Image 1 (tube, rainbow, N blue to C red):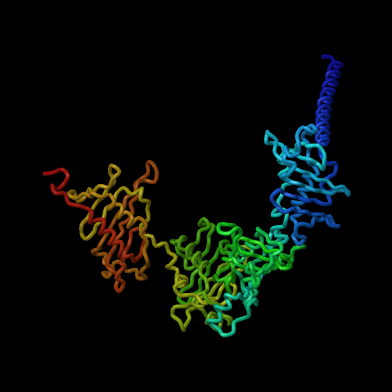
Image 2 (image 1 turned 45 degrees about the horizontal axis):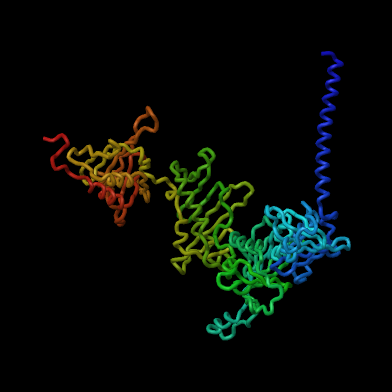
Length: 630
């Protein structure tokens, strides 16, 4: 192809592309002009200075912009705060209303279109001109609605557009309990208020209760310096606050919405608000938010039995009362309810070292990267640390709570020289934390504790006795551990008789003695469950395993378990033997035990022998002797 022809074809292609995009632009412009031509008004929503919404079954609502351009509600009550965002939306949707089709004049009367008694009337004022929009029935296709502007012809608008204008006062008003609710709350005060009913109850106990309408002398106050900072209680005592409980109460207030407003109540007493039962004051530090106070009254209902219910609330400085969710009353805090009661309030998941310094023993646990970040006893060194026990120990410590708190220093309660110090450290960017524990010399059932916040607390002994520990507590005391599914053979001796059970035909079969059989498979399962996860309750300090007192010269029970290979081509695994010897002197519910898999002498619960005895009792003697017969 010649160069001239190539240039001509390129130019033609460019012209075609230009023509295509020109046509597309022309089409878009035409569509835009067509849409603009359908608009009922030529102004924008920001140009509307006043709006009124009159629904057929509701009181009219009217709003206007003030000098700053912000919306204010004029009717039905000027004290109502507007939902400015929704008023802007209604104004914008009104200004951009589209006339989908104008009907011929005189075809039918206004009554036929539902415009004699309109479903909705919207009044507006812009640039000094006032207009009235009326909306009536849906037309037969149910997609458009009849409308009329002032006294002009009837036209059709999309029903979705009318929906945007058909807003009740309940939505047009500001229903959030807290102004600028999106800003974080930084302070909360709670006070109970003396009611007549409470006054009468207290008269039965005291001669001079506080007057009706006065607040309690004890005001609960919590605060934080920022949204990221922890809550602190500053009244009635200065201490760390319970973060979860405070957050729950704060969020209930911060995101609450009112409903069923009564804008001009005749008497606050009708709603339990004269006097109120409680006061909550919050501060969120936001511009336009700041300090806000709410009074809470009676639980009430609207519309009688089965109607909407909740607690009546009034905001200080505003006349209206309204209902909000009654759940808030279940969160009213009692004295010290919002204080942190746990001995350990900080997160401890990131700490890598636990030091125990006690009067009788001391040890150190660390999470070692070489052991897959598992907890290990490093001082004294143990190669059989039970990480599950460590995890449970730490979780139990985290859950311990003080039931009483004392104002004096720790030295008054012997916590300067305690029975145990438990210290956590090694978390990057975290200060170490520690708690201290010591018995109350005047009460054998109580311990004193120094919390990680430096407070002295009283704790029931039964709640904290587990924390007084030794390295032996953290040893893996499993004597046998295997999966039930892998068990293939059990050879055991009980009360001088030796038995062999083997898995055959997916059942456990007695292969020795030959004249025995097991009719109930559950007996075999009872035996397996007794030994599959057997854990000692204690370790004997003595290493004289052959001492006659242990009873291993004539054990009550011994067992050896054979497991299927872990993988194809592997060898079976033999566990044991495990030997259960004599009853522990002075401890009738424990027996001595030892196993070939680890050195030492241990103690196990007597209940193991009871379980084995129950299983063996299910083994029967064949009436005709062995299976081969005579």
